[in-house]
Amino acid sequence: MFMGKLPHQADLIGALIEAAGANGIRAGAIQVIGALQGAKLGFYDQWSKSYRELPFAKPLEIVSGLGNISLRDGRPFVHLHLSISDEEGKVFGGHALEGCTIFAAEYAIMPLPGSAPVRVFDETTGLFLWEREQYPASGQKGLSPELERALLNP
Image (tube, rainbow, N blue to C red; front, top):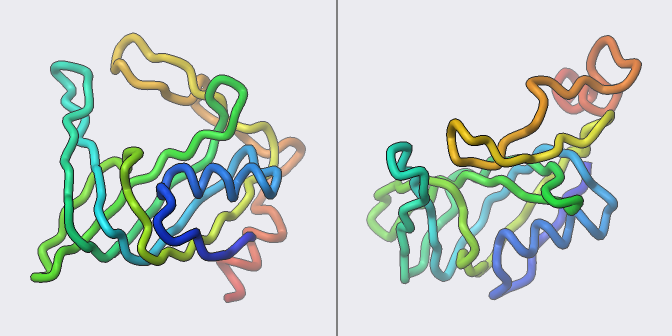
């Protein structure tokens, strides 16, 4: 597992991609918490097959950030969903888009063994989804030792 803080005023998605790349991670699970100076979330309109942008031009707390790392066009790609709250505690959520400016953020990335999931365009949904339904770890029947320690022996 890799943990760290992300740079002040960096773009959240860009900083997570950089952290993954710097550690050679091509597949993994991400958690992030912290605060943003502003955010841009997306809501995927299933009828028009496009993201509606939800901009927030004010300080926000990251209540929860969950996502994954896979490959798109041969490079690490971060798919992240955020729950954010404003100064009144109102919570908003959606797909994190470029334009989420970090005030302070900490992340944890758990690399996943086996083949890295690859994103390809899916005609049915209009999204870039994993090309296979399952990506098992090569030769692995149960949890990896690292994942087992993290989940079962905190």
